Structures are given as structure tokens and as C-alpha cells.
Length: 394
Image 1 (cartoon, helix red, strand yellow):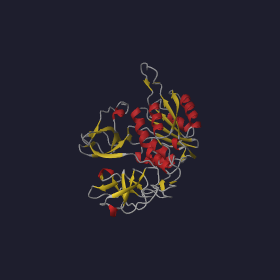
Image 2: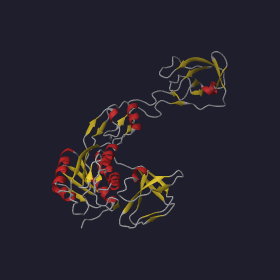
Image 3: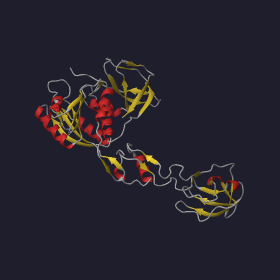
Image 4: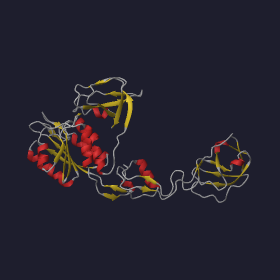
């Protein structure tokens, strides 16, 4: 009998088996979604000089309430030509270099013109309004660590420190295969007893969204020869293969046997999770394979919980999902306690979380409505209204 293990055990087994992918340098324009393979060090101070935080006048604070003569105008991108002396000020623009001698900037809105070239501060006091040299970053500071999964804000920081060709891990090449005599491609109208293949397109999108390279190999019919042929094609050209369907205990669930025939050692074959119990994970000299359930919600959930962290681990990133903790606005129940169960939910305008209508693992329409998924632990049958739950955003 196949041993069922917890999701936590499956997670540890899979991630401990992950092998780091090679590295490469890429253009900063191609770095989004990649994982850094080295620390990034700043080559400059940021700001590189004392700069004005706003449009106004650079002055000496001791002259704050004196009438001041405007000695020059300092636009952004131009250096001051002279220091500010007693009884003087420099009109300055946001981001411009603060002249020597000045130790604060007064806002333009707080100044009165008293003559053609003189001003007077009309406020009661002023903040310094100066961004000081190197207060954000100094030369030699590590601004991004190896293992960072690059998002748009990281790209801005790479540009700021002149890192135009960051060293990153290769993207994992992920082969995707669907199995089942009942499946047809989305462009076809299903006949009686047929359904469209949605899993493969969902998985391609999930792989692409986390920075991987999806390769679709098509639908394998429920025969050993068909599954074997597509699986061997995928093994030869990818790092990880995802096979959806054919992994349960029915007469036509041939994938586990074929995986073993292709040289995979199955490290687990059953996970105490709903949806997604018949999830398999195999390793071989040629790569890795996940055998995923055939229903779309199952494949989506297992990808998020196990496959995505695994693919990112191969790139050197320890993935932490985004979670928010919110109260349930209505109770939610499950019948059995052997497996943990994941349910799609929406966030409400009142700061709570609400389960959405969900008919089970084949209910693909439920996920597009969801803001996240929540877990009912294996030993629990009911979460009461008001229970604080972790919402894993999707």
C-alpha cells in the first residue's frame, strides 16, 4: 500500500532533492523574474551628493528669518557655481545639488518675494529638506543578495548601481504533458464523454509567471506506449516534467509505472492534501518529474504549494508565499480529518475573508474569482466564523 505523507514532508523531500541550475549573465531588460546568482554591490553613493528634496531656496539656517538675496538659480543636473554666504540664498529645484554653505532648504510655498531679487521666509520653522549624500546607500554596500527573485523594484535598483548585466540562474525548462483519452485541445469542440485540456495551459501559464520556460508536449492517450513516448521526449530536453492525470489507482492510471520504467525513483506517491492526494515526485539522472492529479484545481494548488517552490529552489531562491491574516466572515467545514484541505476565498471590503462557492477539484471556475486559498488542517473539521486564517495569495 502506498504511504501517504504530509504536505510538509513532501515539501522537504522535494526541495532537498532540488539541484542548482547553471548561471548566466543577462541584460537588465531580460532580468525580470530571474533569480540573482551573486550579490550586487553599489558602485556609487546614493544620493551621490546632498540634494534638495523640493523646490525652494537653499539657505543657512541662522539666516532663516532675515531678508535674503538670491545669489543664483540651481537647476537639477547642474552644479552650483558658488557657496551660499551670510544674507544669501540660492533658488533650487527638486533633486539639485545643495550649494556649500547652505544647511537647509525652505519650501517655495513658504517664501515671500520682497524685491526683484530678495526673499523673506514667511513660516514659523522649516525641516532641513535635504537628502544627504550616501544616506540611502554608500559605495561598496550590498544592495541585493544572491538568491533574490527579481521584481520591477529590484530592476530599478540594479539600474541605480550600474548593474546592467546581472548574473542569474538559468530558467528551469519545464516539460508539460497531459494524459487521458477524454481530453481534446481547446480549439476542438468536445464530443460526448470528452473535455477540453485546460490543465496543460494553466500549468504553462503558472510556469511562465514564476520565470520558468514551459514546453508543451501534448496529450498522451491512456496507453503505456503513448505515455512512455511523450515522457521520454520531455525528459531529454527539459529539467523538470509535469504530467497531469493518470496518477491515481484506476486501471488506466499508468503514469507511476511508466515513470519507474523511465528510470525515476519515486520519493513520494501520495500527499495528505485535498485537492491533490495522488501527487507523485520522482528523481532520475536525467531530471525530475511531478505526477499531478488530473483536475484543474488540484494541479493549480499542487503547483503553488510544491512545484513552484521547487522550481525556484533550483534557481537558488527560498520561496516565501505572500500571506495575509484575516478573520473568516462565515464558518467553513470539511468532512474528514486525514488530509488538510485548501479552499478558494475572496477578501471582503470589511477586512474579512469569505469562502467562495466551490464544488471540488474539477471546479475550475472557482479559481478566477479567488484572491487566495486557505487551509483547514488535517485534524480540524470546522473553522468557525471569526477564526483568524492565513490567506495564501494567488
